[in-house]
Image (cartoon, rainbow over all chains, first blue to last red; front, side):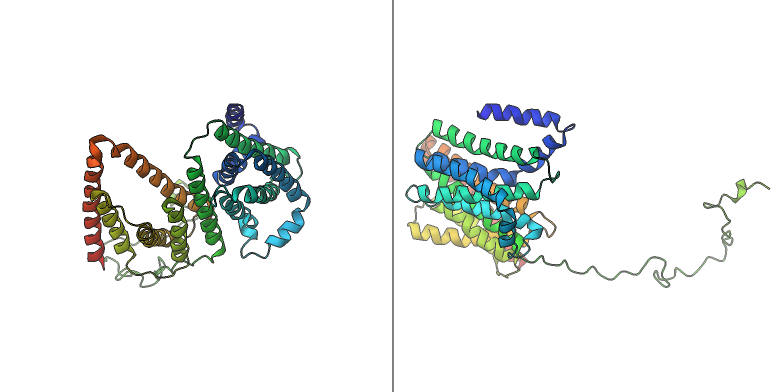
Amino acid sequence: MAALGLFGIAAMALLAGKSPLARWILTETLAPQRVLPLIGLGAACALAGTQAFAAALLLFGVGILGGFVAQDWLLWMLYGLPQAPTHLFMTGPISYLAVGLALVPGARLRPWLLPVAALVAGAMLALVTKLTDPSLHEPVYTWMPVLVAFWIVAAVALTLRAFRRGWFPIFGRILGSWLLAIGLLYGGASLLPRREPPAPPAMPLPGAPQSVPGADRTNPGLPAPAQPGPFPGGTDRFRQP
Amino acid sequence: MLPVLFPLIMVVGGIAGMAGVPLPGIEIGIALSILALGLAIAFAWRPAEWVALALIAFFALCHGHAHGVELPRAADPADYAIGFVLATGMIHLFGIGVGLGLNKPVGGRFARMLGALICVGGVYFLVLALLAV
């Protein structure tokens, strides 16, 4: 399944020059900031039991569907966050925080937090898909990112479950802390007002009077400069009589 | 706990740096982190967990603040945040790998020698930071 998806991505990379959809999927849907929470969700699914895994996948789908249906209401809710409209309504940081919170606490709390994180991540995925849809109406631009997201989550989860090792839970918590840190930093960097750079030092305009000391003086030994003619670049000598 | 806490505390320092909250002696703190961790490796020091947590928290604040201050104003916050945290995480993984790999051969003496070298680097950075004050 993972290999099939990778072949699909390779095919999209080959088609990127011809197909706007393939180019959009490579640059937007598979952008690192969109893929990382999905990888985290897949890792959390791999570390959870089968029931929690199934519930998380189901709620991920419900979240996506809910995000598409209740898009306006969700955007209205997120509009209150500072500078939200210029940062995709904070969909990125919210996904990172939700998935990170599902990974960090450990095996006891994960089955309870994972479905909630999957629901939130799904809703945020739906919102960001709609917000970055360049076609505004083509259905393929809606379902292709959903398909890719499901593939990422399932491929990571099933691969990790197939090759389970004793150190996976520790790595899961570390990955969760990374995702939390990215979410906090990403959100903090977006929420904080941008500092204005210091004003550049005052420079005199070129050609302004007295801009260079002594620039107004001329060498009396040199011939006077020719008066400019009607042709630019001094092409008067080519003028026909 | 340490690899989990370090990026989170570093983010606190990073946000403080981005917000323009001044923390004096950041460069000295970073140089001290190199010196202290080099010494810990060189002398195979295994402190109590709370001591390690306190030290790591202080060093994480210093490193995070320096990153936050240096955040380019025009940078994309998403890419910056991901690069900042992932690069730190990858350095941790590399360090854990080197530590595990060098712990067995020669009874860990090679790893301790590398710790001493890191210590020398820490002294160099500390002198530079003190001269810049």
